[in-house]
Image 1 (cartoon, one colour):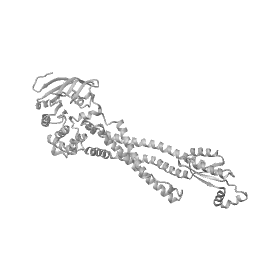
Image 2 (tube, chains in turn yellow, blue; image 1 turned 90 degrees about the horizontal axis):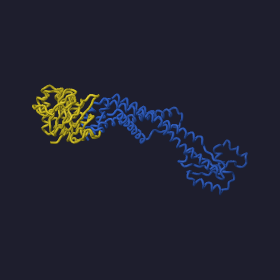
Image 3 (cartoon, each protein chain N blue to C red; image 1 turned 60 degrees about the horizontal axis):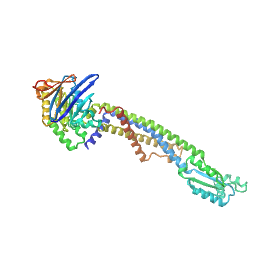
Image 4 (tube, one colour; image 1 turned 180 degrees about the vertical axis):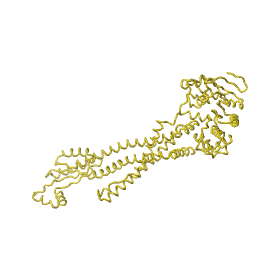
Length: 229
Length: 299
């Protein structure tokens, strides 16, 4: 299989402290990967690097065949259009309706009115909030807001979906629902990387797990398997 | 289409969200540009006045007494073929005497005691418009003065120089005040854009994370700057027009400087449109400066 994400000896320092230290791994196309680690383990730094919000101090990162560390500033937006991102704090625009929030990535790309309507409706239906498309985000529950955020991240059909602590603000039941949603998105062919510190997530996922401890890649394993490489 | 609508709407939302800042920016820009406009209006009107006065500037070329008619014709031909000359009118000694009698009837008896007509024949020369500057006129007069048969060349050099000097000073003042207050307008609008940028930092972060280009993020702020500058400029023209009409009315009411109200005029429509466009340009520049200085964040 082809590697869609590739990290080669990646290191990053924040104020002389290693946020990531010599991290090397690959994620194949269509995989579902859990990135586990406590707060400050370097998960968010790693995800930010995958969408070129940060650059590594050492090493190279490839996403969908592009060397992210060598992208020009003008090329970065086009990378981000291929990589959907879901955040713990949802990052929805409070004064725009659910529909407008989800439509934003398509508007940015200059999609037609017809395409926007069709794709946004599909995405909202996929996350089961299509009945709330006229509402403002703040009138929704946290679980629904996270679903809207996921709808926005998949609306333009990204090849990779990155989720940074997507269940951090959710109760166990909503956590399960969101993870099931990610599995469904993954089943449609999108590579999914979920960063979390919540060990309960493991209960719902029987997939590959990459564990980081203080910026060091500690282990790679499948849930239910022993600790490996 | 949706993208264009989105960008225009974002600019409008920016202005509505920061309503007070927007209004203050338009008002201060309007007053700054109105100050520039006063000088511009003064300059344009004085130039027009100078132009019409310069059209009346005639150079008198007095001829030596008893100059043979052949030499007079030769001189006339030389003057008429001169590229700096627009028109030549010959006034004979008799015509000069007749004009003197018409213009000064009570003093005409003074000449009678002198016997022979003492007034010289002359050419009244109108110079071509492009050679009516004080320097060009002076050079031409010095050249003609040396011609054979010419007794004296006379024109109102002082008045012409004074007017040209005055226009020069007003032009300098207009440029100086224009640069200074335009910079002020750019700064005012730049600060408004900066406030909008800071207020919407979170939204900008979201736009960046979903793949918006720098241009896409910046366009609403450029539009906002251009609209603020355009509105400020249009308002300044309104203020100027009001003040101009008030001034003209006062002149008519008081009766002082009678005749001047016909000579002065407001900017023509084309200039008004150009000034609004210039205001938009200044506003746009303000936004550009602000975005370059503060930036909309990292890429």
